[in-house]
Image (cartoon, rainbow, N blue to C red; front, top):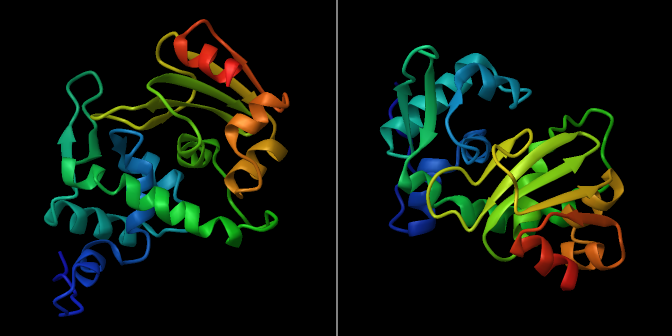
Length: 208
């Protein structure tokens, strides 16, 4: 494990960057907000990161109290990484960073990788309330745990239980939302996001 580098500045922003300022660290946090993840899954959803760098960042995050590593019970018996309470406190940091970065998105480049669940955090910024939401995109499905104080913020694939609301939207609408050109409620009102479900959250979205 490499020694932690430091800016050696008595400033809370500098201290925070001592922990999460290295390349890939915050994107690992983004992935672990989905709950426990195996190393192989993290590597698959972080295209471009080398195995050495990913392993190093995860060790640093363990050392700094941002993540832990544990072994799943049989029949899984695999090791998974997950965020600590301290690591989960980075959610609003990532949300603010994503909001700030909206103007930089522009058009998707041919070299840009994409995963459906990368749209999860931008969508949670535009949804209020609490409940389980299932989202269907052309790129794939994911689900959101709105208002969750503990555990996963989102997950890949269909919802693990009957969701409070299902959202269906196309790539153009999703791109407009994550680029800050439209918000979720406006897209629901004009029919670009279809909402189904009998939960209170679905009813609130349809009536907004």
